[in-house]
Image 1 (spheres, one colour):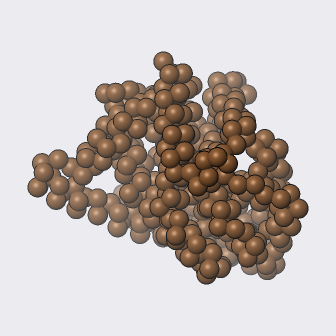
Image 2 (cartoon, helix red, strand yellow):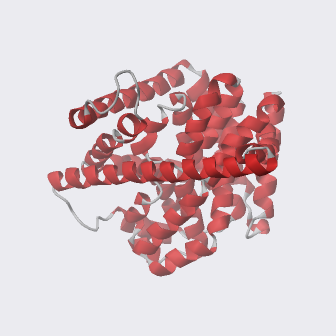
Length: 397
């Protein structure tokens, strides 16, 4: 039965991707199959082998410890503001992002992260045959986040085509920032967060190969990737620490503001729908997304609730959806929990279109305008990438 739903989910993704393709005749099946098989192998290793389970467990414990250490800094400044035994989302989940942002800054400064990104990207390029820049950005996005990643590619924005820009933006929107992974793990099972990060890298590239097929010249890729690795400005160690702290604070404040606005807005819309139609807005979304959830492998009796959470993420953001999902996860099967959890771990939502457009426009106004022209198709592609990742995880649950 798992294999059947795996095939229906794949068929859904590939049909929807094919219908939206810029160049259907240019779709290359071989790299798509190679990446899909790689995803299946990686998901199996991480979930069904002793080494994989130990690795995922270690990563989860590492982030849990980092969040705990981050909370110690928060408690020093804000201690006494919350009632004992009661968790405060802003203090206990969002503010520890500052500490993790500092750690990322240190690893970047010591050139450890750039080294990892470069060689993981090279390995993936051997699998999919795509340009080194595309793979570099795909891996970078999974660590740096959807807006920060374009800072590392500022120079090559002058040279890349609109087609390549779509692929880069799809990768950015299908990823998450390592800085907020610890926060995700407080709301979702950590193993699903880890697996989703790995799967999303390839899911975004698979969808880009379907919707946006093209070929690049190796020489051009070498030139661009070398430009990506050059630093625009060199900071001292303590300048970097200060900048990383402020970056982490900005992320925490922005997420908090988005949550306040979106949760209040959803509650208002739910109130109006209930008053007028005697059904909540989220229930309506649940019925719309239920067929998609079912084809991904969610049991029929849980498809509406799963679809409601998936739709909530699309129209608001992943944090709002995760908070809603956390309240009902205990009532759902392990299979549904896994599929929905993996689907939620990405930046694929309406607000991210604006974030990515703004980030690119700040670096290159003309390219920012190009992103705006394919904004809805970008959301479409990144959502298909999330569906693909959720479908693959369902094969092993």
